[in-house]
Every structure is written in C-alpha cells, then in structure tokens.
Length: 193
Length: 193
Image (cartoon, rainbow over all chains, first blue to last red; front, side):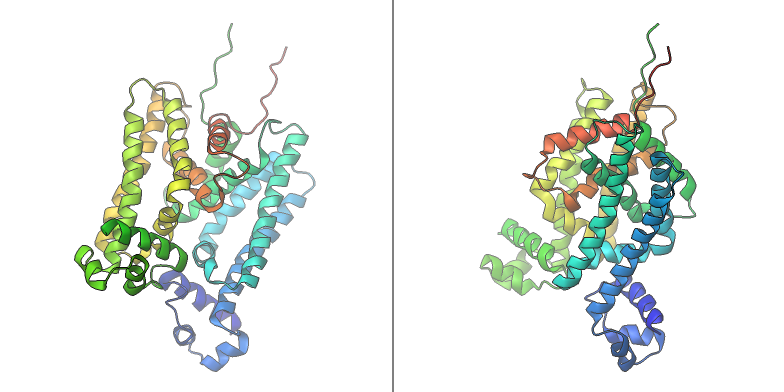
C-alpha cells in the first residue's frame, strides 16, 4: 500500500503540483482511506520527501556501483554515468520533475537531507573528473568543479525535452553526448606539413 | 504602475509560487488596489504570461543582435551567446526560475505562444551550429539538434547553481564553458614521432 500511495503521489504531484494535490485525491486514486495514508505518512510533505529521497538515492547507488568497477577507465565510467542518467529519464521522468520543481515545499530538515545527497552525487562525479586528470585521461587544465556542473547540465536538461522512444535512442544520445564531452565541437586543425 | 506590478509578481511568484500568491498580496506589495491590478491585467495568469514573455523575448532579441553581427566567426558568436545567457543569471534569475517552474500554469494559448518563442531561440542556436559546420569551424559529424540541447543544458542549468559575485566570475565561467564546448575534456594524444 505504501508503494501504491507513492506512485499516486508521483502521478498527481507531477500533473497538478504538490500544493494543488490533496491527501484526499491521493487516497482516492488508489482506493484507500485517509486513515491508511496517515498510517504510512505523517503528512503530504513526508510523502514528497520520500519521493525525492527515493529518486536521488537510487541515482546515488547506481553511480557508486559504476564508479567502483575496478577494470574501467575514467572515460568508460563517464560514459556509464551519462548513459545511466539518460536511461533514467524513461523510468523516473516524473520523479525527476517533482525533484527539481517541488523540492522547495520540503521542510528545512528534509531539504538539507536531500541537498546532502545531491551534493554527494555531484562530488562523486567531480571526483571522477579529478581522477581522470590525475591519470592523464582528461586535461590537467580543467576546472573540475565547473566542468561537473556543465556535465550535470547536459544530462539533467534532457529530462525537459528528451523523448525516449523518439527519433534518437538512449544509446545514440549517450554516444553523441560522450563524444561531445570528450572531444568538443571544434573542427581539428589539420597538421601542417 | 504596470511595471511595479510585474516586479512584485516576479518577487512573489519566485518566492511563494504562482498558485500560492494572491492578487491581493501583489497589490499590497506595491501599495495599489485590486482595481489598479485589473486595469492592467485581466488575471493573475496574464501577469504570469507577461513575465514569461518578457523573459524569453529579451533573450531572443539579444540573441538576434549577436547572430547578426557580420564580422564575427561562428565560434565568436557561440562565445557571445554563452556569455549572454550566463550574464543574464544576475539580472533575470527570478524570471528564469518562474519561466521554467511555473509555465505549466499558463493557459494553452499562452503556453503555445511561449513555446514558439522558446523554440525560435533553440532553432537560431542550432542554425549557428549548422553554419559553423558549413564553414568548417565545427565538425561535420555533429548532430546539430542534439548538440544544441546539450549547449542549452550547460548554460540553463547554471541558473540553478551559479552565484554571480562568487568565486568564479561570469567571464571566467564563460571561458571555461566555451573551451569545454569547443575542445572537450579529453587529453589530446601526443603526435607519434
């Protein structure tokens, strides 16, 4: 039941917004009572917190697993993380939109909890860039922190426009973006003879 | 007065959200009456529409001016657009957040109007990438549409985290991102001897 309430919450918070959704609507959507709701959640805000936590913890755990694979180069790990985030759009688009759009309705405690996890995701990503610099895969001149924000921008923005199942597949978009991230868009100069 | 109402709307919609802000609060913030509000705006939704339109039209006009400068290369124009968006954060952060977060509260007509302008901004950007490919500045293998979404991601995402006046200046961030966009992060292989 707890899971069903969360699914209904994701559906309604995404479509109508957190403030505009009542607990009554959530329980109606799953054929439950308000009593059942308050058995599992102290408040509507706590349900929002659970949706946001579940979204970011899932990403964080996936990222940890990918980064720990010992035989992969930093470039391969970068590819794996870009693919993970893009693939995530198909399964977690609504949760992601709620995460980015409704977070400000959380209490300060919950906001801090979630910001901590979001920061951990970013810092692990930045760590990968640092490691890539240290082992000579990435350029030593990079500003790792700013580059990481740029990488997050490229993939996080795709939640707003990318349609899985459309003309470009998740694998193709990953390859396009990883090539862009690694090599940029500039036409290389021909070597002088 | 119309301008003051818009400023108060930007302040309140950003802080409290569109739905949670009443016309009463907006007029109180500027010391006006509801009568004055409804003299300028048919509804609260129309004020939201004006805020969004003003935000995107301003960007669109700046972009047009930059793209029309005849003596600039495509690379220079790209730099100018990245700088324009990043500099915009300082002056239009609140409008931008309202644009991205509250747009869904617009009526369908207004939504279409704004989506059209947003698309125009993206298409002009994509056009620049196409021109850069055509004249040999950018790689012919690029997927211009997907790359444009990536470029928008890098700069639009900075609205969520970049603090103008912090450790990295707008000019520095622009240089970091333009270098990243042009050249990527990969360490170039040394030419074999």
